[in-house]
Image (tube, rainbow, N blue to C red; front, side, top):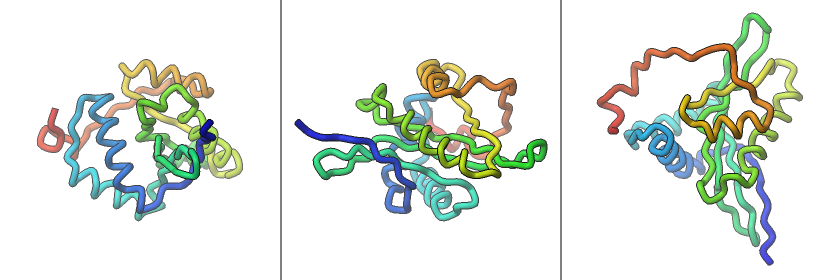
Length: 166
């Protein structure tokens, strides 16, 4: 019988192709958006080269001495003057469809939660989720996240009709 486990690690520049593919799949699945791949690749490379923006973590399945990327999670930072601290924002969550419901997101979330609790400047963790994505909302509530009192508004200068092909 095969022995398998999930390992969480920081993403590196070597993970760029996997992150591009996971983000492409996520946008198509959750919002029916076809992202411009050169723009997406440039954005991920710029993010991975700029730790001040945040970081990605990758979930890997370790099975019989081989590693397969099965999930990702991106964190960005928001300063809170009210709290004199930083919120870690969870973004770009993706778990390979065949691995969903098996604790991959929970492992990634618990990994960053443990790190956040050891950093006195982190005042909380936030995420946003597409309002119709009920299954993701259920998963997030199961790990202890609760709906916020805030609603997100935006004016998107980049992802207009010319950048996204529906």
